[in-house]
Image 1: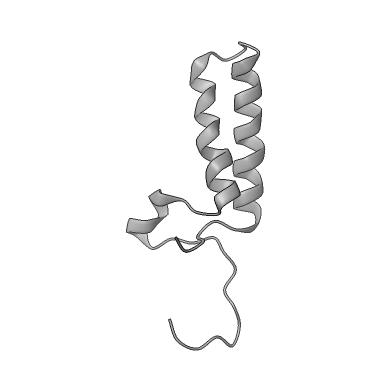
Image 2: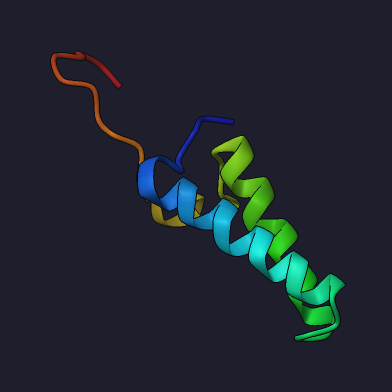
Length: 68
C-alpha cells in the first residue's frame, strides 16, 4: 500500500472521525457515527482505497525525484 493521504487531509480525517465516534458513543448522533472509524483508520494508515481508481493523492510530491 502506497500512502495517498497526507497533510491536512490526514489531520481532518482523524479529527472528524474521532469526533463522530465520540458523538456516537454518547448517543448524540446514533450508531451511524461509528462510520468515523473509517476516517480514523485511513488517516492513521495514510491510505484511502477510494483514491486508487482515480489515482488521487494528497501526499506532498518530492522535488527532484526521478522515475515513477
